[in-house]
Length: 92
Image 1 (cartoon, rainbow, N blue to C red):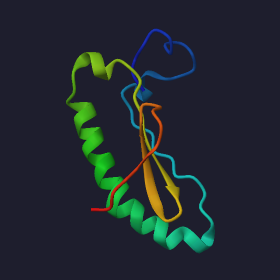
Image 2 (cartoon, helix red, strand yellow):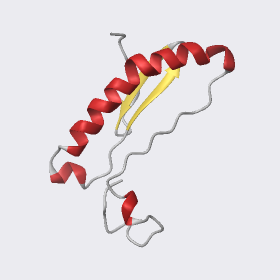
Image 3 (cartoon, rainbow, N blue to C red):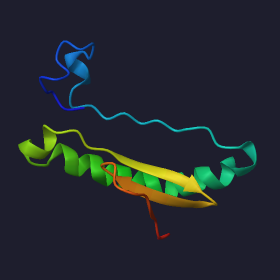
Image 4 (spheres, one colour):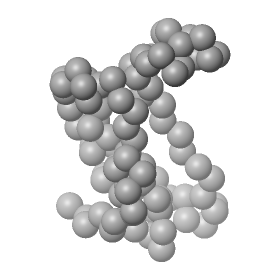
């Protein structure tokens, strides 16, 4: 959430600027154990790297909105960077 003129005074407190939001959606109970394992082994390490790069990236990059998301489909992950189409994630 970059500090930009478009969100200043728009209900977003300044302490939210330069923040990272993590949301985990609902998953059917029959798939939760597998999804949890895939999340821990694949998505969370990648998220940690992405946040580290974001915090140490250029000012131009930091001042624009970016996102990284994973979609759990058929016991596998699909990755999306900055609203691009989802691509399958190869297991490590």
